[in-house]
Image (cartoon, rainbow, N blue to C red; front, side, top):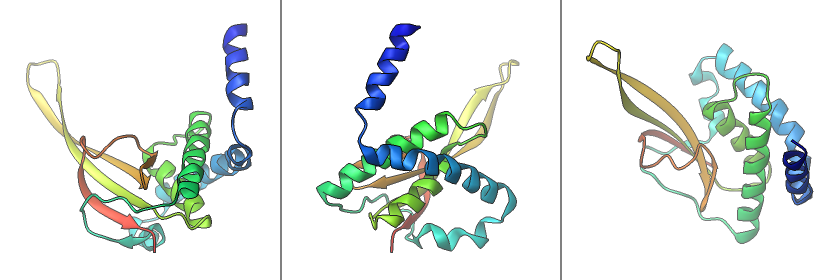
Length: 161
């Protein structure tokens, strides 16, 4: 227990100041985004996600400085999501990343994807369900959502203006 605590402290100390600057705001933004998703129809806030750019997978070019910031922002969002009392799944994380990246004028692409997930229901019959996912990339950085291009069929992409 003590060794794990020491490891977490060492990891925290090694983080850059920008990480700590965005940790609490990311946590709050995750809650606000979750509330928006649950109470507002998508069409009312879709234009705030960026410019609709079809379904082709693409990543915007960014500078080394923007890449470093995107990595730090990604870490802050992941940690904030891990310790939030509400469900902070892929969509609120992507919306939060979009907001923070937008503040720094870091180019991004926010993707929505679907995949068919086949599960056995116990009666040797397979049920097929659609699984949705959202992820955001900026240059070579997968800011939220993990490596999803190979697992999900892209159905929509919003890019920074």
